[in-house]
Length: 322
Image 1 (spheres, one colour):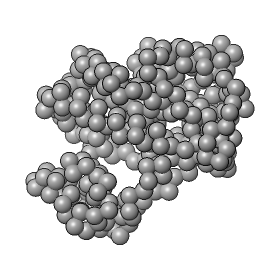
Image 2: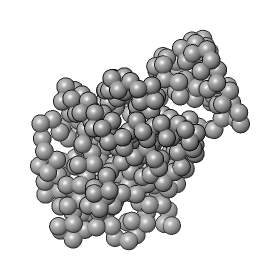
Image 3: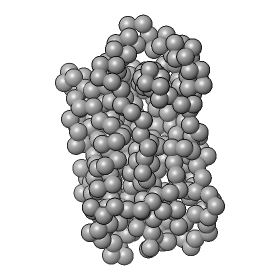
Image 4: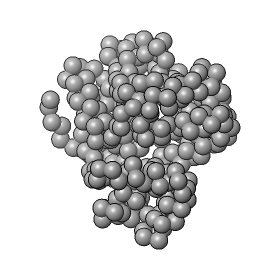
């Protein structure tokens, strides 16, 4: 594999996007489409791919999603359908057993290999996702904090289940108030991870949101952040959740739970809620998560922001690709 040298994104100047003619992609080998859950990333990627093929290119999607890696949770995590994957090949989806613990370090190595191999073969990678850390892992070099010592995570998760996540959050606040202030007291996985790092002396103050992103990418990349007005996005999320439930997402969750789903697989939006039969709670949690994603995206430097409110994916693709 060729080792790519980190480079300042050629489409940005001084942290702001430089003016470019509509449709520019030639000379910029990687396209990244990222945005909150439910915004329509897959639909846009499909339309962009159609236009790239029409001018002789070979587009391939590379997923940058922490949960779409799990086989058996395709409906719940919004993996492109078989018909959509016939239209556009997707890499790094549904390849990990639901019982396995998966890490961003493992993902980064796989994503770098996929992107480099596609570029070497003359293809055009379209990196698609909404998980900020995984997006950075796919496109840049990532500095990772140390993993927990054996047994620590299991002990903390059991403690959270027995005493409540809010109790552990209060303990975190007593030890590291700055870190605790940036974590929802009900977010068990983030609370546990923070306590792991605190125990290792590796818990720094919470980084600024834009530290999850960088304009220094391994390969020249066009970075497109997708946004939408909140009311329309919330309506799309509610409809998407209903469609997932109708397509059998609850059965997926029950099967994964029975199989012994790993702690990382259980982070999927709606996993706990559907296990409890609470569809409305799934909608609420998904809307809340999307709001955080939008807040993060709108503060990112060095990216091209595209508002999808009231727009068709085909029209947006026409503007992006020409």
